[in-house]
Length: 169
Image 1 (cartoon, rainbow, N blue to C red):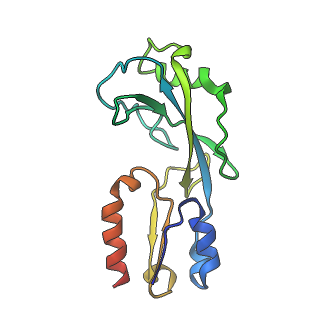
Image 2: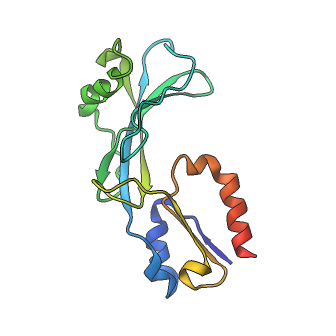
């Protein structure tokens, strides 16, 4: 039994495993997202999500377990995963937040971290969801491929695990 849950590398691994499943592995697209933290006391006590756009949920406000505010992610398409933090986008990032919080100043944002999300569709394409492939799709018994799983799929990981286990029986 093999479960390909290699995240960003799942499509490449899927193509390397075995035919005929290799032909069913999708093209990988990488959406890099930058996060900024907020310098100051948290101005909100709840998560805030703007209206989503085609490539993601939009720059939203999240709170960690210590009550610190994090804004992000934005979407920057990359040919390969890249985790370098580029602070030159701070003003544009702040502008996207000011659509729902006009009082934010650019200098209240501090560089936080960068993440790369696995996407099954690229720039300009309609939004797509993650894919779970089993023998019914690719023809290889006891192989389950997980492609393009990002949030909110990650928050459903227990349900996805149950689904994968059921497909391996």
